[in-house]
Length: 76
Ligand code: SF4
Image (tube, rainbow, N blue to C red; front, side, top):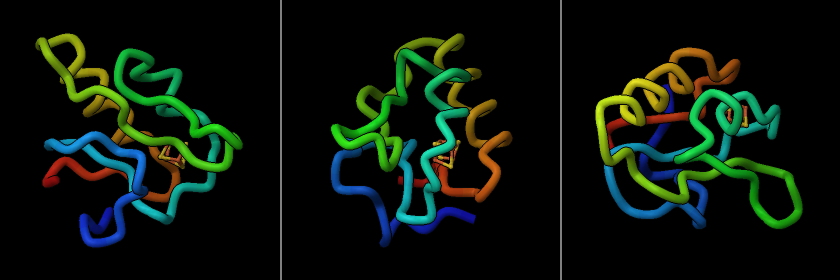
């Protein structure tokens, strides 16, 4: 389970976030490309835009469910 006290610093504020358990597998950037991207050195993903419609919310929830190390939270 992701921990909002250990958020990656690049996350925009809001509901969804990536924490420091991320292993940079890129799955979330494929599942929710409108909301997740890799940081400059490609070491970790972060939320660059919170979902703004039902489709984006669904995609973010899919990314959360599929993250192999539970690094995505939705209690930000
Ligand atoms: S799916 Fe999880 S581990 Fe993979 S890049 Fe996204 S947050 Fe990181």
